[in-house]
Length: 265
Image 1 (cartoon, helix red, strand yellow):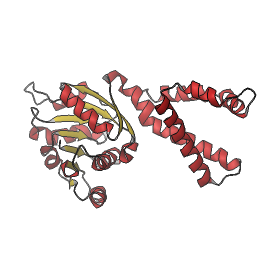
Image 2 (image 1 turned 45 degrees about the vertical axis):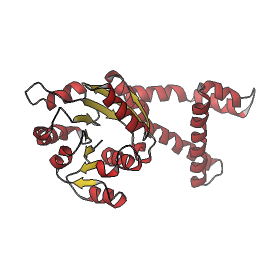
Image 3 (image 1 turned 90 degrees about the horizontal axis):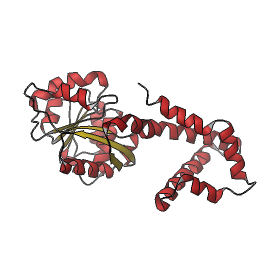
Image 4 (image 1 turned 45 degrees about the horizontal axis):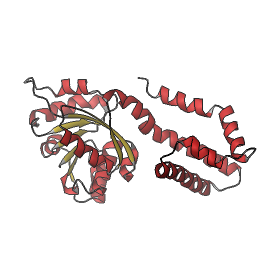
């Protein structure tokens, strides 16, 4: 499978790096285009076998799947460049552009002959560069084999989930925006750790490992978070005092309100 990524910014570059670290897509089958060269040179320095170019048509023409990873206001311009050179019978088109739905993308892909490609929305988060992304995929006009292959590709880069398009905004809030929310918790816990006497770097190390451990426990046991909380919460103990203080300060409602806010357009 040959993949072209149009745009080497934060998400496009992270995706290219993640794909290059995987085994399903050969590094020599990854094509990345970008209007300026510094980001392409950085990619090439890390992964010499990646194909880089400033020509969007060159990248798109070589691929089985073309992934749009550009700013929303650049989508139409890019599609106008590459659309005449795409063969919809053999090439699929995917978008990582936030807020762009399949219906709108399909309208912009229409060449006027009624033929449209298999079309995807792919919403990873920036942890895709370290093969730790939570990626949501919605599709239209695709085959089961195409869906399976794409999910396999992104499962190798973390975990992927095929969802109805209507769940994409919620998935974005939980996983894409959620990276920032998790990092904000880490920062807050670091500050608390410093107040309690640890150096900032040591506090960061402690909090990061604690979060890894919490996630690993849930994955290993398949349990509900509250069940694991109960295991470490003794009557009159320190943990319940801390949890109740956090809830009094609005911890859970604040998280939920943040998620709700980030799904609004």
